[in-house]
Each structure stands twice: as C-alpha cells, then as structure tokens.
Image (cartoon, rainbow, N blue to C red; front, side, top):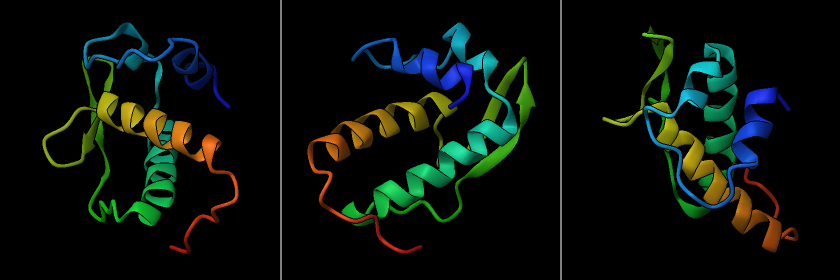
Length: 96
C-alpha cells in the first residue's frame, strides 16, 4: 500500500474533499490501480464504470474520467466498499 493510501485510511470516516492536500500525493498510476480495485469491488454490487480512467494531471491533482467526479470520489467509494467487504469476507470478488 502506498503512503498516500495509508494516509487516506487514517482519516477516519469523513469523506475526502476534492481540494484535500492528500489528493496531490497520488500519481496517475496509483489512481489507475484504485480505479481497477473499484471496478473489482464494485462489480458484485452492480456498480460498473467501464470508461473510468485517469485523464492527466492538473495543478498537481490527477484527473479521472469518471462521469463528472474528482479522484476523491474514487477514494470515498473505495472506503465504503472496503468497509462493507471487511464485514462480509466470505463473499468472493467477481471476475472481470
């Protein structure tokens, strides 16, 4: 896990804002991996984002082609899915 990801986990249950300084610590590769994890974890709930991808860096923040949402939305969704997964470890992840 990257330093940025562990820092995000330490923030508790509050959502990460798009202008949070933490968002400047993520690289495009890290956000791409987070998008892949989101797709894997979300598919068993019918949450599909086939066109979600990184879309460059502006002002030190990675842009995400994810509807009209910032990368912080990806982190917040992953937090919810990880929280749910930790309470239901017996459910297998679906094949992508």
